[in-house]
Image (cartoon, rainbow, N blue to C red; front, side, top):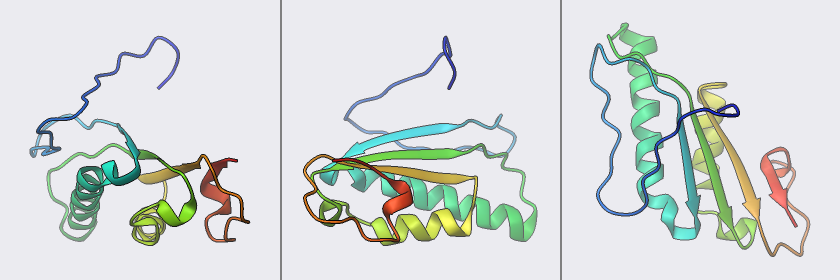
Length: 119
């Protein structure tokens, strides 16, 4: 997003991402904290499946990018972090993530360092 961009927000409740063939591509910004990652991780997996299918079979889905912002107290509290890093490697530039930790006292592991902000 840029300054003055229009965005839609949804908090809680039933939500999903189910683009249809022929829909215009959208760029998603997903924001999660703690265990709130669960439904958003499912959305990331769905996006990865669509990207993989698109690359393999040339389907008609037009996909934008997905950026996940995920916060927890420590890196050990970041659920699915290895899976998320794997998705980022599999679909560079299409799926990205920024982890934010609020109470980390120990050194952040080397693999996560480029993606972690916070204390």
